[in-house]
Image (spheres, rainbow, N blue to C red):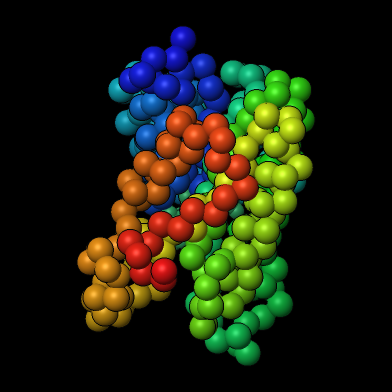
Length: 252
Ligand code: NAP
């Protein structure tokens, strides 16, 4: 039975790309809110295991599953494993993603394909696999973690921006198609979030000038994203097809 302290009790939440960064924080948050939580990862087995043990020690119901979200067979395996253990996923957070910082003219076809496969096709595959049960049960919540670069111009991140723009379009149209079945689909578009992904992209001096541009005077934390996710999963049954920017007022 759901309580105010554990509003997601009785729900099954899959968080893709949850071994570290934003996804790990979302997994911590939804598990603390009572959801049976799946930590999906692709390579970071040790980090996923450490997170799994941390959450199990707190008494939360969690499992970790290795699967590349860009591969349909692995997505199928992951969902089948969850269903066998707990039942069908009714809360899906498509967070797995990779960045690519490159001059457009130096971007290879393979790099384009990899970014699209993980950032866009991965969400397509997970939504497509999750939806039949959500439709049957007339309930579901899907959150796609996009980026401010899906809404604004991003020099030297054109392909990444295109993948996130695609994810935003997917979220809006899927929301229109699934609303009648009691399923909401929303996207979160964060500005810079303090994770390893950003560390790989920014020199210390660039980081300082970036922070100077943000009206709230700091980068977002993974917790900022996780709190918004929790709100969308618990408090917001009538928010559907929205793209919520989370950037401290950076790109108003
Ligand atoms: P991160 O620290 O690099 O973590 C990325 C996560 O995605 C890892 O857990 C990684 O798992 C997983 N992943 C990557 N490819 C995968 C695949 N094919 N299948 C399954 N999992 C996969 O990144 P982050 O900063 O937390 O970003 C999370 C999401 O937020 C991404 O979609 C990103 O585009 C978006 N975002 C980030 C920022 C930012 O400034 N950090 C801003 C806006 C949006 P493994 O390590 O196991 O591969």
